[in-house]
Image 1 (cartoon, rainbow, N blue to C red):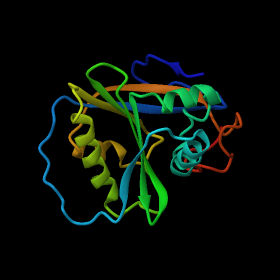
Image 2: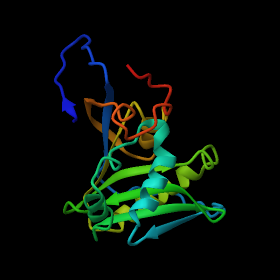
Image 3: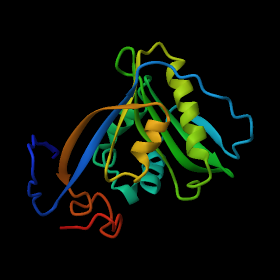
Image 4: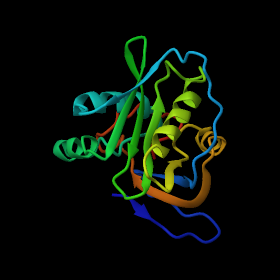
Length: 201
């Protein structure tokens, strides 16, 4: 269960068994002019029309375990299948040397908006400049639809450079929240030994 709190100045105790993070919301209100990079990317961004849930969860775990991604893993199978196969959801894989090494998820279910719900690469692709190229393509894909807003949120459990990466991509921060949730390692959703940078309490 996720709890939202209102906080004035100062600190608040987080109960044992919970994790807390600062969530930053960012948005883009108009399409940006981007310089085309014509050099080869050494990988392919490929849309998966009807993703298999086991395939999806495997890739989701490979990318997100280090950052305590768990939101899709706690969904019942039918609900997950309905979500990722919804006609207004676009799921992409980043294929590198024939293997799935990245995930891009765009949600167009709300009229005139696109939410970037998940974006990440496995360790195989980190540091190669591929994230920038994939994000540029994600921006192009989003604004090919009749939208007025492209938005996302990220948190302090994610990659340390996530917020600055999105700002450099043209997103503007507009809201911040504190999120408290059950530690997914303590409820059997993720292994206990993942994300050691976020200690279990």
